[in-house]
Length: 228
Image 1: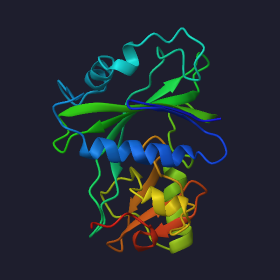
Image 2: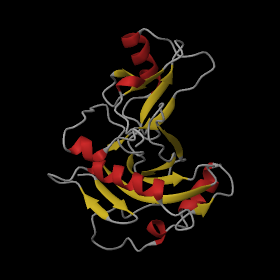
Image 3: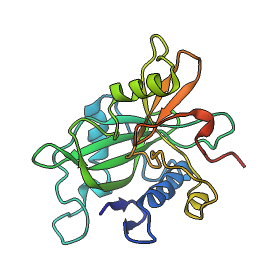
Image 4: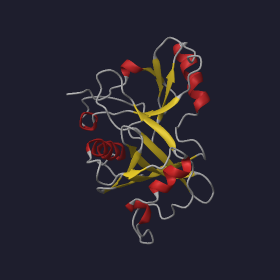
């Protein structure tokens, strides 16, 4: 089971309640929130500064000793990971995120804190703390490793990575309502910031997306939400 502890609400995965939809909704809230409410300034973009800002938020300071369906131990934090929102031409503009992986005592990732960034990346707003349905390896947020993602693009689309470029973790700003009702179909994952997928800049001048199952997609095939 994957629990989602959001600033505005708590949602728990069960039939008819998709955690990806809940996280997508929380991301929309972050994009339209009043920047004077719940936003904490970053002293710098160093891992320590991001974690220090996160620890000032309500979800980090609340009492977690109860019996609720949420992570009890937030003491084992990995370095924050920058996850960008996909912004192809004509798409809705959503916030980028810092994701802080949360480990258990054995060192595997069991959850993550989603921190929305303001447009200038100088302040964060903690939108949710989620619990993964299955642990992830230490240091690996995406289902597919970075090197494997590059190999997937090279092998499936016969495109090498652009010289001097770096792969980037991203999430897909999808229309959650359209996805839930079947108006759009997407099985590549990356529907919320704490479940990122890879964007590989190609030598062909195009960005390529590698989904959670290792399938490589062209950017044009990713159903991002369009501007109204």
